[in-house]
Length: 338
Image (cartoon, rainbow, N blue to C red; front, top):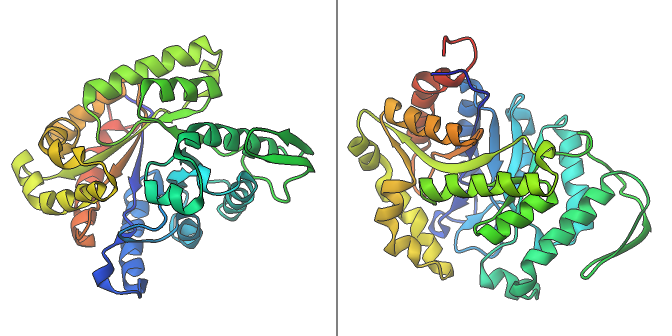
């Protein structure tokens, strides 16, 4: 197996059923166990998720990541994803810059435009405006991050004669990953010159085909040299057989994916078997390594794995991470003979 420059991260599950009560401190302590394991096992990154008014108790990612700074070693910490349209870009610019300063320059800003109607309704934002709001937010945030005086008069935001009070430690700014689930959206990410974050629950051919499309659009926009991160989310479970891997966590995975139906995404229930067979990285170490090699051949280089699902005991998630770190990760690290 040829030597590759791949990174491996963990997408944290910090959403909890409401029947667990309102005191989330025990859950946070258990989450810290997962973070410590990821750090000590040699994973490269940790990511948090973002929602408001959820059917689950969902810790907000910026606050959570700040809490995790001293527990994450030299791992990158990031949002996977932060929903940009709901808050003003001035707020996001200073919050993320502060987090980057606090972490010593380890932040990755993963963003998206959102999909839940109840969130848009609560914030009084027209869902049809979500994509242009996100693009303008990124434009204004990166202007503010220069530290120079900003004069921005856009469709949604107006900031004239102002400077950001805190700028990121990373120059010119933290890596920006943009989630998109359609060819048109992926084209817009390429034109902006940011990394495209491929979603977890898409089939191999869709992900690979759209990565090729993204690279072509990057080149056409003159942005090919600007993008070095090609990340993708995947669900991961390793066991002695593929059947054992599914048996270990399928109940929890189904519960987690079932939550999408709360927000009108019923296809996650109706197509679950198809997604399970064609999108998940479940199986033996050899099977998982083969999937990684296949996706890496296509150009993906940062795999952000979900090993936690609703109700999964932390020790199970950690066991999955341990097997990956012991039996799969070394195959893709330098100095191991390929």
